[in-house]
Every structure is written in C-alpha cells, then in structure tokens.
Length: 285
Image (cartoon, rainbow, N blue to C red; front, side, top):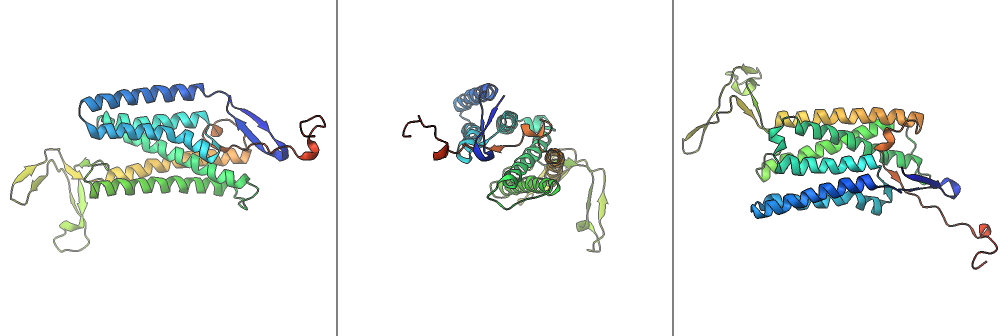
C-alpha cells in the first residue's frame, strides 16, 4: 500500500513504496505488444507495426505524466489505463475484436466515460484544495464539472473518428445494418412528412458507370450515426456513474476507499526545515 507522510504546514508527500502489480501488468502487456510487433513485421503488415509502436508509446504516458506533473496515479487507475490501451489498440484493432465482439466498442466507451470523469473530478478536486487557487466548488458542482469534462472528451473523440472517416476514408464509426428507415427525402410532396420504409432486406448501389452492386448485408447500411450516438450514450452512463461516486466521496471527504482508487493526487514534497528549526549539532549550525 502507498505510504503517506506529512510535512510541515499540512503539506503532504505521497510516496509509493510498492508498485509491483503495476510493473508486472506493464511488463506483460509490453512483452505481448513487442511480440505482436515482430509478428506483424514478418507478415509485412506495416500499418499494424505502427499501431504497435503507438501502443508502446501510449504505455509510457501514465508514468511520464506522473513525473512531469508531479501527480500520483492510484495503482488501480494506472492498471485500468494500461488495459484500456491494450484492449483498444491491440485487441480491438489488430485482433479485430471490434467486429468479432459487438459489445467490445460499447464496453470501452463506457469505461472511457468513467475514467475521464475520474480525471476531470481529480483536476477540480486538486484546484479546490489548492490554497493558491481561489476555486471552491460545492460537491454537486464538482460532480457536474467532472461529468462535463468526460462528455467533452467523448464528443472530441467522435469528432476525430468522423474526420478520419471523411478525409482518410477509414471506418472508425462502424456502420450499422438496419431494416427500417424514416426519411423526409422520400416525401412525394417534398415537404417535411417522414416516409417510413420497413422490411428492407438489401440495398443495391448504382455506380457511375451504371454497374449495380448489391450489398448483400440483409438491410440498409446506416453510415456511422447509430454507432456515434451509442458511443456517446454509454460515455454518458460512465460519466454519470463516477460523478455520483465522486459527489459522495467529497461529501464524506475521503470516507470509503473505492473513489480514491481512481482519483489522481498531487505529490507535494515537504518543505525544507526552517533555519530556526535546525538542530544545534546539524552541519553548518
């Protein structure tokens, strides 16, 4: 368990004595990614090689943020972040879990909403408790801010997916096959009356040269909209869950250990002893 010691004037220095579990998870996942990188290189799948390199870089970010920003990531949060990166990049993209398991993307977006709310909550909590910053939000507004932070990150990610699909022709916003559509574009009077078409079993594409290409998907192809709205909805659920947890955490100010497993904290090094507190036999006295 992390050991916490107090310095003068209420300053706190959190020193992590035991990170064995985090280091073990990091080592195992990193070894797995390196093995995947070598395999993809020999298979001449260089796009996946770059994806493996990106994953290795992302693995280093939590510890880099800890050092640069002088924060302490709880072990639980750090492990979940590592597993999240691995699940999204290696399992989701390279191993095609996004297409093999329909709930994979939903699970990750729900977790993303939860984690981003935790990070947003921690940022506000740190500022709330910082004497140099005149910010004193109530527990309710701290929870609302954490929720808004999480939803903003979720929306920005959907913007990124949409941009990649539009300009690079990826399919990050996975398409959905549906059998019913409702659209005003089919209104014979060119008005705003929605025409409902049910029981769609196939769609035939007519190309520029007149070639007809049946999709054979068993329905109409929704291009990304349903996937985007579903992602935002589950992000919303994850954000709400942690915002409620964070609210009661602040109301009880530290009672219960669940929320503390996900809330980063500043590392505050104790100030040097004042001159008048220096023992007479100390060097230089």
